[in-house]
Image (cartoon, rainbow, N blue to C red; front, side, top):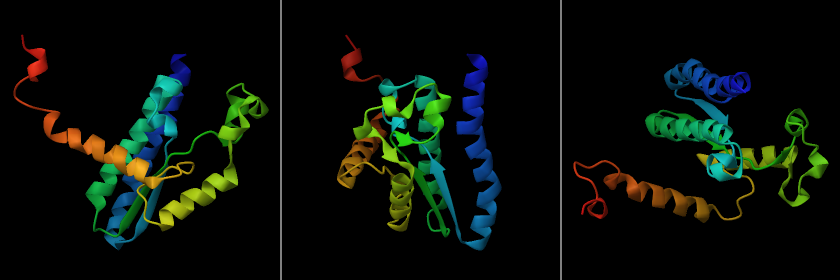
Length: 162
């Protein structure tokens, strides 16, 4: 539905972008402030759900990562929280009763918020409340960054040449 898609883009892309643009100049001027964006684990796993939703949440993650880079040393802390399935009213609005979901994947809202704030206190730029080992995230980030020097070159890779 194009109307639903547009509303999702407004909520998950336009709103966080505008809020960041409105808040960050004051934070930078004061050399103090915090910006916490709510993304989703689906930003990392588009095959698990609707691609458009996953894409909007990937935008939030990428926006946060770039802001952290741009604001380093300016007294502003940014964080992206990537919750998994969380017990909220969103499920009812989506037409799914929360009790129909596997309970082992469903985190209570208070627990998710507490974990997000703990991640913030620990200085995490990306907090995934259910991820047991932060080294898994660090390894994924290192693998992504390793691609960097080869993502844009003046010639195609040898495997594409006859």
